[in-house]
Image: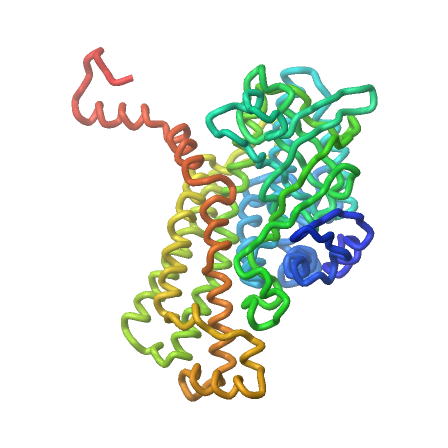
Length: 482
C-alpha cells in the first residue's frame, strides 16, 4: 500500500496532458491549482498507515488475502458498506474537501458485479478481465477516476440520435488487438491526479446505441487523451495562502473535461463492448453506490462547516446568544440526518449474484436527495451567523501590506480576545466551503435531483403501499388500483 508521499511521487512518472486557460500545466505536482486536490487524495493513502484509522482504511482482498487500501476493495459484506461511510466522514473531517477517490472505488464495484451478470447471461469473459484488472489496481494501490458523465448534447435525444455523434463516448473501431474510442467525459472529479480512468456508459441504451455501450480502463496519460481543467469559484486565490480559505486541500475535487481522441484500448481492458442491455443496470449500480457516500463525506464536510460557524460566532462576540445556539443545533441535526441515512442504506444492503454487496437502492437515493437540500440549509445558516463581511474582505496582499494592513486589522477586528487574522482566516474558510462550486457539486454530483426522484419512484414499491391502504380502507372488490 502506498503512503501519501509515495502516491504524490507516483504522479511524477505520468505524462498526463492537462491544460488551464490554454496553457499546458507542467509539472502537475506542485502546481498551485492542482496541489490542493493532490493533497486531499494523499490523505486516503496516509489513513491506511495510521493505526487510528487502519481498521476503516484497510481491509483484506477477497482475491489474494492480502491487506489492501479499502479504496481498491470489492464490498464483501454489510460491514464493508458501513465502514466505507464511516471512513468517508473521517477523511472529510480532515480535509474539508472532496478527496476524489470514491468515484473510482464505486466504479470498480459497479463494473465488478455487472460483468459477472453479463458473463452469466452471455457467456462472455468480461468478469475475468475485470478481476485481472482489479488485481493490478490492488497490487499497485492505484487511484482510479470513475468516468461516467458524457457531455450529452441535446438531452431530448439518445446517444445515436445526436447531431454530433461524439457527444457520448463511442466505439469507432474494433480489431484483433482491441477497440478505439472517441468522445469526452465531463466534470471528471480527480481525473488529473489519478493513475487510471474507468470508462462507463452514462445511461440506459437501445440497440441503436450499442456503439456507445462501452466500459473499459485506460491510463490517464494514454495517447489521444487531453484534460482541460475546469474553473472553480475563486480558483485564482489558490496562488495566495489565506485567500483560498482551505489552505491545504482546496475546493471540491479538481474537475476537468477529458477528451478522448481515438484512444486505443486493448481487449484485456474492455469490460463492455456493445452489450447495450446492461448499460442501464451498470449506471444504476454505480449511481446507488456513489449516492450512498454522500451522507458520509458531506457529513464530514458539514462537521467542519459547523465548527467554523461556532468559531466565527465566538470571534464575532455572538456565541452566547440563544438564537445562535439554536441554529447550531439545527446544523448538527441536519448533518446527523444525512449520516444516519447513509448508515441505514448500508445496513439494509444485500448480496448480489457476484458475491459483492450493494447498498439499499431506495435509501441510497434518499441520501443524495437529502444532500441536495440539507447542505444548502447548513451553509445558509453558516452564512447567516458569520455575517456579510465574508463577502467583502480585502485580499491577503492588502492584509499584509505595510500601509493598508493596519487599517484592515483594526477595522475587521471582532472580539478583543482573538487576533483579527483568526477571524479573517475563518471567514475565508467559510466563504470557500459554502460558496458556489461546493454547492453545485452537492446538487449535481452523483446525478442531479431528478435522477434520484426517478429512482425513488422506481424503488418505492408504490403499488404495495396502495394495497396496504386499500386493505385498511376495506376495499376488497376486484376493481382495485393496479
